[in-house]
Image 1 (tube, helix red, strand yellow):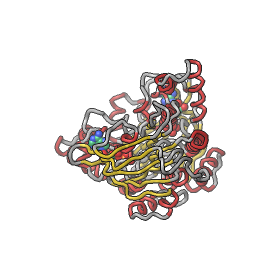
Image 2 (spheres, rainbow, N blue to C red):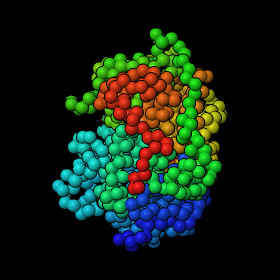
Image 3 (tube, protein in one colour):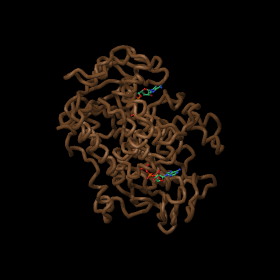
Image 4 (cartoon, rainbow, N blue to C red):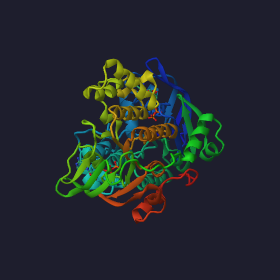
Length: 522
Ligand SMILES: Nc1ncnc2c1ncn2[C@@H]1O[C@H](COP(=O)(O)OP(=O)(O)OP(=O)(O)O)[C@@H](O)[C@H]1O
Ligand SMILES: Nc1ncnc2c1ncn2[C@@H]1O[C@H](COP(=O)(O)OP(=O)(O)OP(=O)(O)O)[C@@H](O)[C@H]1O
């Protein structure tokens, strides 16, 4: 399978895909040349992941290509058998899926999974494949690739899993890399490292990259061209700068305006007495195994109605802290104290991977209703009304109520998880990357909802995010984590505008800004 010189590595014409009777792609045209990076941006649910899956024969059950064709390295994927598609995925196309948790085998060590990709696709022997897997994991930006290779997926942080998937996708030395939000779970310093590395690969090997992202600043800084999707169509496609500076479509204009505005509420002082905070985390420590201290003497408080941000390096212990705060895990030492008046008022967690929180067998309506039923809130009718209200609040159409999680886009699932966490009316919401898979307009809507709930109901939020713009604008205070410890904390604007600690400075400097940065292959 070789690409004819001059032919694009990806050539999509009039591609139409539907799920049952529901169209998801409506006549998509798109090309990616060798050594070219094309970013696909667009609203949540607009068909970006469907496009990626259709190109490589990985549509979920019920998904069907209606018309049009996709040539990958000159081969028509619709005409290939399952075996040929597997070969294509192994030898020509590297794929980084959107959800790192759902995409790894939970019972196999991560290194073995990367090695497997090498053994199948590069026909490497076992020992060579193991060694090469560790090297690839280091290339993908993992600092302790040996440990990560030995770990099972649940023993890695979200960002570590994401980098392992990048390593697996690069194992076959692909001609085309299709990456669906490959850096959405990564802090900006690691994000920059991976994007730089991919940039080198594009330049060195002439790989073509189709790069799906909700982050317009990343797209603008890294892509040669940007394709904008809305409602299953590519509504415009052109050189990155042109799309940003002279958007032709109203949706693109809205996206650009929203990304430039970095909207945020006027900061208001948290209500309640600072001397009587809602949450007190005091010197908590959590170890995995004997030597690996994931959280190391962390202390902070969150006031009633306060939005407290937690930022920091991937793997620094943010999600572990979230699990300790919500009682899903117990600290080895130190304490977590919560002062609430209503019995049963527990902190609700919106997990990093929206798959993890939702029962795959249940309709999403049932998933959102369940916490209400468990706490005996309302009768059946009242609960139904409440679920519909929650769907409105998180900007989800009621037509999705009876679907199962697998039948939703990543961003739609993330919003269901938020609705579920809000259902019992908690005093504290712990959100682990709650808006990382959402385009800026839906992001703003969710953040505005949280701001409103805090003003109206005194909801406090512990917000874990790698998006420093979001944290600066929406959080009252922020703490910065690195290697299990808090390196600094204080008012968000102060810490993120004039950082005191060198690591925070590094983080702030690495944040992508719309309109800055160089295209990969210039
Ligand atoms: N298995 C499925 N069955 C039915 N409908 C589906 C299925 N998967 C996705 N859809 C629908 O198809 C549309 C496109 O979904 P897709 O995942 O491609 O969107 P996306 O642009 O990647 O969104 P996001 O940014 O939220 O991940 C959505 O409206 C979604 O609800
Ligand atoms: N169950 C586990 N067993 C062993 N190690 C674990 C386990 N869970 C997490 N770790 C390790 O603990 C460290 C902290 O992980 P955590 O998920 O809290 O990081 P994080 O800051 O949330 O990262 P990210 O931003 O990538 O999500 C990581 O090095 C991770 O590999």
